[in-house]
Amino acid sequence: MSRYLSAGRIMQEKKFDRTFDALKDIVAFTDEFFEHEEVDSSIRSIVDLAVEELFTNMVKYDTETTEDILIGLKRVDNGIEVCLTDFNVERFDPTEAAEIDIAAPLEERSETGLGLYLVLKMVDTIHYEYRNRQSKITFWKSAGDQHVRD
Amino acid sequence: MFEIDFGEGGEVVVAGRLDAAQADKAQTFLDQVPEPHVIDMGGLKYISSAGLGVLLKTQKRLMAGGGGLKLVNVSNHINDIFRYSGFDKLFEIETGGS
Image (cartoon, each protein chain N blue to C red):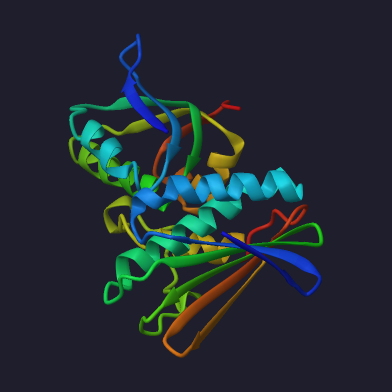
């Protein structure tokens, strides 16, 4: 785990194995950060969901690499900034994920694909950057902003 | 930590965090449920899209036989996830969990 100053705030980072079993370690990492940095717990579930969906998406689809995935957490005014970086991978921009028709009848609903849809609905802002074969996703979530995007 | 089992009344009881690491466990259990069933979600703290996929797959199987799942004691947070996902149109849902 590493800590450094970024724009006057502590950024805490840790690398995780690219397996679903790493999720419990990610939850523990997030637990510690929320407690230590006194981040508003009302946004915790949304942050957990967004981190899991983005992390598992990297695990499932960026299969040409074996490198760990880096997760960084930073306290910002009234909320949190979260950054996930995947190394030595092809470009995949989650902000371009296909829309889901949530009004479709049961027989037309797919059991996959909801994850990125929910992330894009529930976080305040999300940014994607691809450089030197590094895929970097940053999102922000603030307390008191529990609306979802249309 | 995720737990799934039958309750005293025969309902399915789930508790803990239903994430991508636990989805196979949940699916394996629900694949054995042969008929329309109640799932008590009062102890469920968290669900991700992997868990939603498990519920959707089970609902498709049961609805094909004329039944379906009823989700009860759903917390407000998880009910929000269900609404954002359109599950309120696909499942019978009762809120009431913490």
